[in-house]
Image (cartoon, rainbow, N blue to C red; front, top):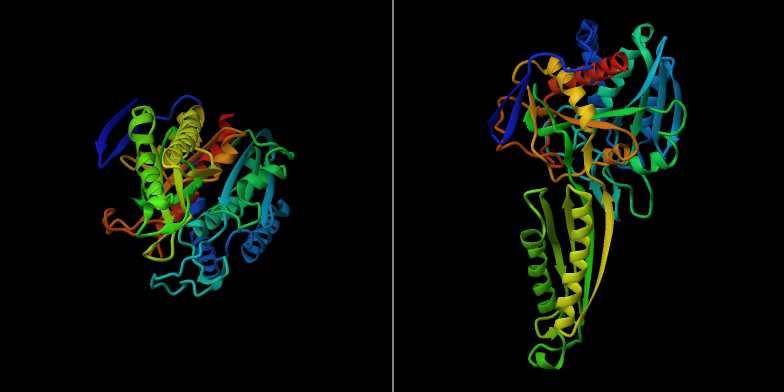
Length: 434
């Protein structure tokens, strides 16, 4: 039985009893997580103070691998450069479930006043940059390390197997390198024995207060693609524009034309879409019309057919407008992360379990977000469920809080305990239910 209310753009979902197939969460989960809380916080602070960029998470990976080995697990390192995969076999026969945490930080200089704030600097794209866990991945790793210890302690009671996936480079691999979930899958993380039948992942989010758990069935986070359009004209004197073909004016017309793709061609009542030009460059002097201009942008979609249509329309709009001006347009589109699409059956099963963890009024159906997540690659292969754990202190207004990826991003550490309890509860309940 459900009751839905509209509150601040969120549908608040109250589930009065576990749904079909969902197992009650054993009482030991909450108690075990509480006992592990000091360790989880210590791990998170240590990782936060020593952040590493994608495909370079060597210290973090060693910390994780050493911990898992001490728990008696089968551990594989060096997966997709720095990834760690471990297997915990329960004492009873049963299915296999995978749990994933991402490990990488961002090229952001931390501005949060913490005793364990990052002072790390490194070189990124040829520039010296600060490095910070500005998206909560330090918390994700600490949470999964805690869940691993809890489940290892309860091995005798587990009916099945858990595969732990500590993933590098969720934020993207360095230029010229492969990485992330896509490379882990390519290297067999889902096909090697034991093969998981489902996968769970979570994300600490500034959009929700600590104590809140948010989820969404179906498309939850957008597919993210990038495009580049090079417009070629003919250089001329700025005082005699009729002797050339102006790629800047043509680019401006293309930019405006791109905005009609979403507003006039997409069925926005079906799913939203975004086409944004983030940079437009061309020319070096006020009185010289250049011979070319370049624009780059991002595409966000929630439906695969709409995604294909947006790509096609970008090519069509750019090419035709350029042709009408006597110019040419070269369009390239780089396909990025797919839609983070929560399996509806798995989500329907998981919601009552999360309700048991969150308590009354604390489980919400979140809005779609145009951010992207490479957890989506796992979901393309097996049923997956991805959810958010609120990480903003309750005394901070959500309209004022710095977002993920901000140098001011700050995690309320009570969210780590809630995240560990939620992930452990889903795991134990899923194994018992299946």
